[in-house]
Length: 189
Image 1 (cartoon, rainbow, N blue to C red):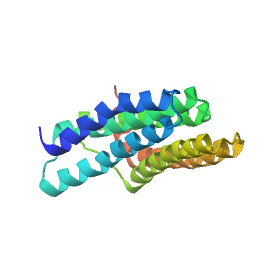
Image 2 (image 1 turned 30 degrees about the vertical axis):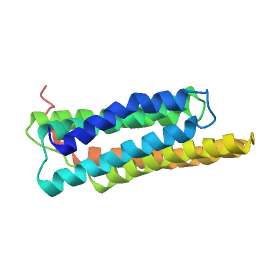
Image 3 (image 1 turned 135 degrees about the vertical axis):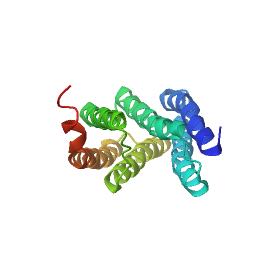
């Protein structure tokens, strides 16, 4: 297994530790620990792709597992946010629905021997999701340190999550429009 694939597997291994840290209420520093684990996991996403392209180490395993690891990481964070009452469930449902839609399109494309590369909107969506998730955890950590019980921290986090939801919707629409041919080739089914 090459280094980029090891980084992808490492990212997936970090997910349960991240979730445990995020949901653990036994320490006022749990948001900081979760923040750091999520930041490390997110950086491995950047790093594995960069190394794979630079060193010609792109594999079928990486093509499949890298986006799956990203989805598992992001969706895990968002589901935990719902459980902790840190976000609106509608944002999370929209984001999950978009991920299922795009994954379905990719699977249909693969059936036709077509590989769909990420576009600028997909990358913007990913950056906005990572930023929003990190900001929510950072805001909650600052709030826990300050001892303030202000809804301001929640609402600032919601603004970041709203922005990432908008990027998610736009990238999904662009993705569907750019890949209409995938649907037309499966109409007979």
